[in-house]
Length: 240
Image (cartoon, rainbow, N blue to C red; front, side, top):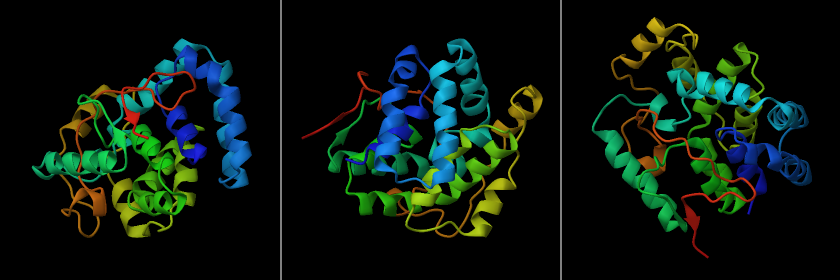
């Protein structure tokens, strides 16, 4: 198991008191594996300290404003690639099958493209395979990192780290295409409504191919399960 992916999954989950209590252990795990670049690790540790010591209600409000209310920061991978097309349903089925074939069973209510769930799956795979899978949505991670940098959010570190670990590096034109999409402020309700009503847009080559080979569809944000936290009881389980 690659614990770094498990930790990043937890850090991207909705803040809870349980998550706050687990932060010292999670921080130690990141330092122990030392897979992330030093600068990224320092920024990530700053974020983890904020989560560990911050007011829980403030942390939860920040999380909702960033990841639930703002479409351009959605934690569902498919949200950033396809519109409300028919492809997304099959893509979800394919990705769920990928998880199950790898020994990870998820609850029927969970959306397979939720980034913390994707990272939990990667934590169970051989490291080389995990790095290769990371390369498929690397342009999404790079765009999310840039949008979070503009907001001066230390959550940027999670996505910088994922992009750094990916075997395949994203193409500049794919990142630019994502960054060209509307990125409204979370407090601008009119702009947010307009962003959610945009017509479907395709990005990059092979945007309509199968999920396992391209991770290429998108769907509205759904449940936000918390997974990968010490002592937690996630709704998905890994088969031995």
